[in-house]
Picture 1: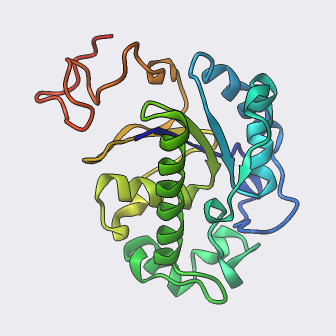
Picture 2 (picture 1 turned 30 degrees about the horizontal axis):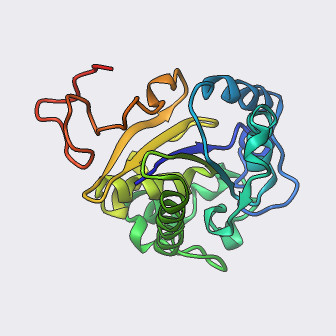
Picture 3 (picture 1 turned 90 degrees about the horizontal axis):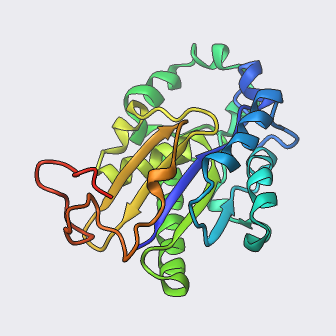
Length: 237
């Protein structure tokens, strides 16, 4: 199955203001976020991409703009609302410092599987829609481009954490243990046996994620693609 590069959008004006943006329209990248987006294109140089997918929200599309300008063959990103931000309902647009005083905050932190935002969706619903979207895109891309294809999706912090939790086999209650910085890249290689989380919240060099000549294995050493290398990946080319 393909490798997914999950990118969180660059730093936004809501991030710097300490506001829970949710689906609020008109939330753009700030100056730092635009610089992060420009650097992303360089970080991904040398990694062949077959498809770009984006949350429909502006900050995600803006994050992909420099990359897609450098990769015109990809065309515009496919929008997928299932990879959009959590619907936070009545929490949308409120300061995080204020929300931290709400009783629901502790549920979100400590028992995420039981958290449902008033007027919005639950974190279980978020997990269901996002993981389903990823698996559908994986199947489509594998059918069209092969098992070694690499695709990129730009989304949001809680969305990415839910996908990572699923890939790691973590109960949703533990997804707050995962940290996803603005414009970080999380790489997950899917196989018929299990997913492999190759990078999580990475803000550095991504060149080792480029496909290896003759196909890729999970950890090198000639092991089958769905198997882990006993003792750990070899680091060999």
